[in-house]
Image 1 (cartoon, rainbow, N blue to C red):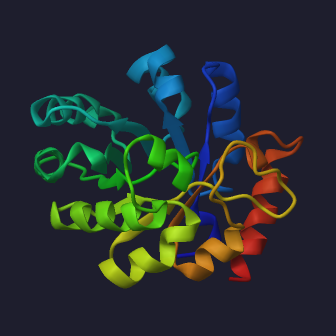
Image 2 (image 1 turned 180 degrees about the vertical axis):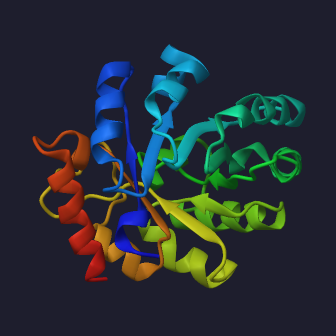
Amino acid sequence: MNPLERIFVALDTTDIDRATALSRSLFGHVGGIKIGKEFFTANGPAGVHEVVHEGQPLFLDLKFHDIPNTVAGALQAVASINPKILNVHASGGAVMMRAAAKVVAEMENKPLLVAVTVLTSLADDDLVELGINVTAAEYVLTLAKLAQESGLGGVVCSPLEISAIREACGPDFKLIVPGVRPSWALKSDQKRVLTPKQAVSRGADYLVIGRPITGDEDPVAAARKICEEIALA
């Protein structure tokens, strides 16, 4: 996989015009775009169709987490958007994930279905507050193994858990990694971060990068700079 294909740019905005402008300008300079709950809640499937350039890979980051039937129905409802990647929360449990995997397996253009493990805004102390008395790294590994056993193709994890998951789940299990910040960008609200070069060196397949690209005066130049960094991995 070349460096460009590894980058999914997070379009964290509700503004269709801004999202469309970013999508068009970055087409061919990154592997795809990520659209999440913020945009989808404001604009729905029609807004996604407007923003996504024809042939542009889409990571539809809606993090479904509900009873199995509801999650299965939600996945069926977004199939027409034709995403490359879809996700659910691993903490929804094995039955929910198996139901999701069954629906995705029946889709005409089968997307990669992955599970969110632990959000990159959470650290060990945050998990203790939730009553989870293991480290973030330990909890992530437990959820990753459960996702793989449930038939999913990968997980979303922080850069710090890449090596452990890769060792436990093997080379074909896809790792999608947010919390990636180039050395020249601020960490912002994410606590468990590494640089793009470090993340790919540890075994990340795809990197989700938002503000270091979208917040730059020249998003295309920022994307190219990150590609150059990944190429050194």
